[in-house]
Every structure is written in structure tokens, then in C-alpha cells.
Image (tube, rainbow, N blue to C red; front, side, top):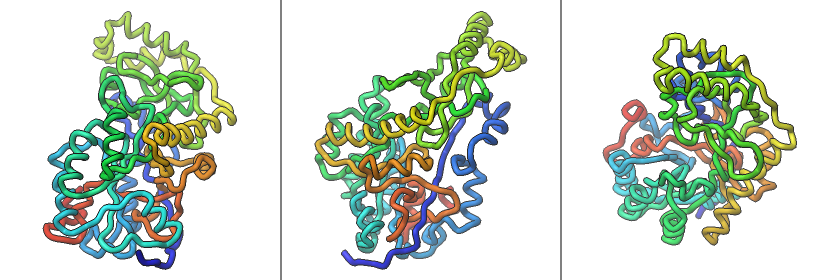
Length: 384
């Protein structure tokens, strides 16, 4: 491997606070978004701003890759979308490297060499085992899986199990790293932003906020909790203090829905007004600074230690949920044994180079793999 001069330090946060419940989007999203820092929001405005300020690498628009190491992220993938991207890499002679090579580039300036890319899969969905792993083997490629150890062997079967995770790690095809212990979304402010309606069933599983207190296994809001008030939401890895409702508003609202016909309650034109009256405003408590620090430290420490213990490896890298890293989280990354972290920031370039901020590394959406130079190459505007 060759040594190259460090580039200017850069970091970027690409956060995706995704709200899919239409009742929240239409009635409350303006108030809710105004309370969430811009650095923690995604959406079309962020995309346009990134494009206008040159954050996307030149190879997306027909240019060369240059000195950067492209890192792509995927989630729950179907074969028909993933295979063409992996085939593009294999047919055009690209090599896939893992997080240790990233850290050598960023910290020591040691390049992994030409035509190197990184493939990452967040969350360790079941499709990593059924779809991604077989395709990686077929095309002779490697990938990093950022797993959530407390979600492994989820009763619903949404994620891989430990046997599958160990088999992938042992194969050398997959390098398992941390995505924190639980991947927690939380209520962060005493401002009601909506209510649980039947549409909440469409809310992504990992976006459902934690509802329990204490350090035991947390409980998360379920779609059957119709009428439950929803407050401003932020990542556990943000600097926000968690807001913990006292339950009175929830009880009143859920009772109103139950007496009003359950799911049929939401056919009433005045359902939102009725629930706002039943809630009577938000009440509860904000966690203390010490509680916040302890919760963040547990998420980081347990995320890597559980994976290391169960897999017999040394987990040293983390992808922070939704790309969000508050100042407290960043301060704890080194102290909790992490060498690098993917935790993005607005208006910074999407690509890893020597000298980059090791705790603010940038990734690209996996759909841009086919923009890499080679046969049957696509451009940015044909992939979006």
C-alpha cells in the first residue's frame, strides 16, 4: 500500500429523521421540524443544498474517483436492486475493503490502492443473510455489516440471528461492526407533534421511539397504541435530553380512542381536535445530564462489547444511527474504544480521504455504485 499526504479534515452529518405517518406530516410537521436542528434533518432541501455546494463527488457526474475512498451504505435490500450494483463492481475490477483499511487511510494516510471501495449494510436486516451475503460470495466482494446486537434474533425475524452473523463473520466475506446497542429514537421535547393513528403501522421499525425508563431492556412504541401522543423525536446519539411523559395524557387519549371505536375513531373529521383536548397538553420530565451521559455511554459501550463477545472479534468501528452525533457522543467515541465512526455533518464532501475526521466519516447512498467509472456507467441524474 502507498502512503499519501493527508487531505484537509472534513466531517459531515447526513441525518434522516423520517416521519411517515400522514397525520403527522400534514398537521404537525412544520412545528416538529422547527424544533429539530437542521443538522439532524434530511429530505429534499438537504439533498438540493448538498448538490449545490459540491458535497457529492465528481465521479457521480462523469468525473474520476480521484484520491478519495468511496463508501456506500445499504439497508434492507432486494436482490433485483442490489445485484446490478455488485455486478458493476465485479465487472469493472473494483476491490472491496473494510473498516480497518478506512482507519489506516484516515489516521495513517495509507491508501488501500486503486479501484478500492467500501460496501456497508446498516442494521443487519434478515436480507443481509438471504440476499446480500450470497451475492457478495457470488461476485467475490466483501462488506461491512453494522449490526444492532440487542435487535439480533428479534422475535419477528426482521434481523439476522447470531448463528447467521457468526457464519458471515467467519467467512471473511462480512466484517461485523457496531450500530450501537439498541438504535434508539426518543422523545426529546414536551411538545405534542401528533398521535399514533392506524398509519403508524407504516412507520419504520427503528424510528419508533422508546417508551420505557431505566437501564433494563427498553420497550418501544407499538402501532396498536392508538391515540398515544407523539412528541418531538430525536436520536439518542444527539445532544437532546430525553423527554419522558408521565403517562396521563397517553391514558386519556387511548381511552378516548377505545371508547370512540378504535381504528374507526380516526374516521371522524374532528379526531385530532378531540385527542388534543383529551391530552390537555404535554406533561412529564426531562432526563438529567447524568442520565443522558450514562445512556449514550451504554449504547456505545454495549454495542461493541456484546458484538465482540458473541462473535469472538474486536469491534472498533461504529455507524451512528441516522448519522447523528452530538458533541457528547463524539466526546465518548474514543473513550468507549471506537477507532472510527460514520457520523455525518451538513455541507461537507461525501467521501473518505486521508486526514478526515475519524469520527465524522461520510458515506454515499448505495444507489450511486453504478456511477463509478466503468462499462455501463450511470450518472447521478439517472439514479435519483
